[in-house]
Length: 632
View 1 (cartoon, rainbow, N blue to C red):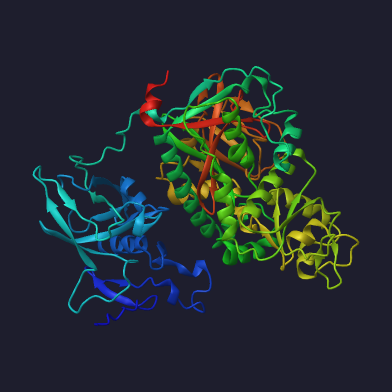
View 2 (cartoon, rainbow, N blue to C red):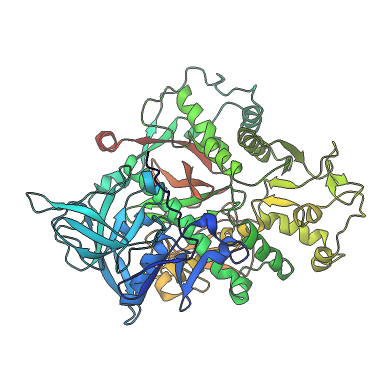
């Protein structure tokens, strides 16, 4: 019997070969990475000439680096490699201009060419991310390419390409590529050209698929009928808060629900995944410069802890919520509630049970996997002992905490809910303990960090925050919030660094870095003529729940405003993108992330132009495209 010797991948960072243009291709065998040289995720970020290329040594990093070195072009940052297929422009750094990109589906009559980008869709060998390579040579029966993050083996002597894949020209002169992996698929290729013949049409889908539609369920015969299971603590708390078995507090919305198409929900998934990555890049950019960080109006005393949190815990984010406007201009993001977002239970449990109660057979529930997705994020969180859920006695916080407790327990994490801080005390060794003497090591809080900081500022008036951070205050009768949340041995969720992406001061940074990204709205720290053209929204950088928002038209006339407690001179100005009016209501589309990827969706509605804390969640259903177009 012949023994086949298994090849061993080259160690991380080893040069596997040299691509045309004298560009090295590196091994991305992460199992062999040296933790002393690459201690955290930040160390994997690769810059060339102070331009971010990507993470060492992934496929997108190589494609961006090859294009930069050979052509002096850079394409927009993306969350997943397959999203490059949707890019329609590349930045020419030498001439400071945008050049058009066109995408050609596998089998297109325009053949790939040397220097173009070859794109794989997500799935199989390339899991959720897809893949990208650079084409170097094109033949009728095969194609050669260069790439990273596949194989991690050195090239044969004299070889100047990573591998070659089979090709065939069809009878109609289409160029077809067969993937080397049986469980993966090649989407096509992206070429820098203005010629759109045979290219994908980015507006090919029916515009009616990008709408939100309203429907009314037949009123229940007996509105007092129970449909939530009050034997479950979270549902009982929800019924207690709502004063009955209602999804919406407003009686006008209790029979109302909305539908979107499968095309829209797929776009929402892409937007969620891509935007999370862009917000993370922007956060890193802010934390590299104290002048940029100063724009966020965060106490300077905790800057070092934010840096520490980002360096050590950037992958421990559990869940957040994006707020979108869906209009004829496509999806536009307003902001990312990355820290202690709300509406999870409404989206992940209540809207589905409401649809069952009214026997809705139209479409599917987009929140059905939200709890499971959050549980999966907790499984990868690193929590290795009891987690304490900190909440107030606010009714909404209570059911939100109970919903999160269910997700934690589904992940196999033991947890305790602590209302207020009266049930915490100092232990004999100076640690904080609960009433059962369990040390507080892991915490998830229902409050946003900004809300907590307001209380911390009050607590630390007599002993400055800076002084508290340098000397542990464990001599008091009861621990304060600052003692719990800012102690080095306590790991808090969401991590402290989420102060940055949740702060609206991140919005001008995103526009500065990624202003050609379709999901973003032009936003700046000062009102510009460009923003004023369409009207604009003035927002406090630390505002929440729609408080203290002012909306103006292009003539600076006030259209609408909200009150609140976030009056501050620190503002941002965002171009106006009004929520669509459907069935007389303003409708905001929301998506949830779990572990940084799409996890579910819902809608919030209000008669006013601004969605606020008291705005209702009503049920959302996702309908197949053909069925959606046939709806009245």
